[in-house]
Length: 108
Image (cartoon, rainbow, N blue to C red; front, side, top):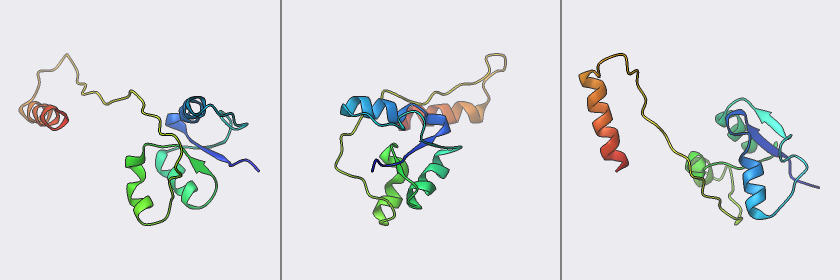
């Protein structure tokens, strides 16, 4: 039988992207079990409700503890990131400026 696919509401396209990259098809590519958050999707995978495609950095502890396994399947690198945004209508405060400087140094 096919594995049940778990989807996080904020990352609904991840399975489609991964299946396409792997050259595979699955009946639940866009319709599997939808969970409201990444954390709930991880807990559902730990509970054995299905399989999850996720950035492995979010499940390192669960893998190390043996709660999840990562099969030797293709790894898809996505071109995604985070953005620092603030209101252009307010002057940048000293704490926000310090945080921005730290963030850019840490990311650099």
